[in-house]
Length: 185
Ligand code: 5GP
Image 1 (cartoon, rainbow, N blue to C red):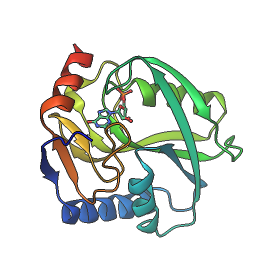
Image 2: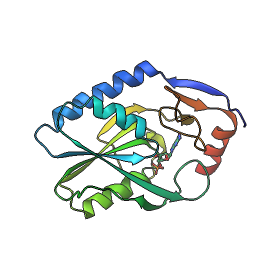
Image 3: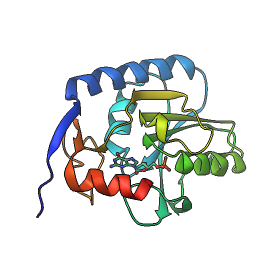
Image 4: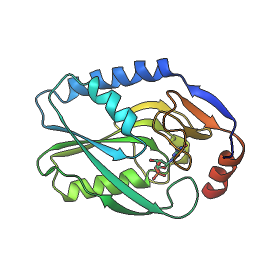
């Protein structure tokens, strides 16, 4: 198995603190509402697990999975739902919990999907916002960290299904970084 070189960019401690703060903010904003944390699989699974335990109000948790077509390490714009939510979402306050917003195409597609399902509201919570790479007008309502450099792994984020179990976030050097740049070009 090929080993890539990594550099830590967000420590375990910073993740804990920021995710806890986000949970408190969400608890304040959604008090008295019908909150559903709609986790976008697979990269957001650890983020969502930590976030929901920092949320002190009643909420439901559900999961969706989308596939985006095209080679490379980011979404290529053609998106389809491969795992639909199991809850009925009409009338619910949907908070999409996503690992990374990059071009914004995935979250834009999901927002439209949940609006069509007549959710009462649809908001976005992203652990990492890669702001400078945005291709559509989309601003997450809650952002953990803004980071524009490199291909990120760890804390649920993978490279070819590896590294999800790392407790901090790292940037991959070498091959993955080059692949990410090439697919973005
Ligand atoms: P978007 O549709 O916003 O371009 O794509 C967002 C998705 O691209 C994320 O959910 C994630 O799956 C993938 N992605 C974008 N940047 C990175 C990255 O640095 N690391 C990993 N592991 N995935 C990324």
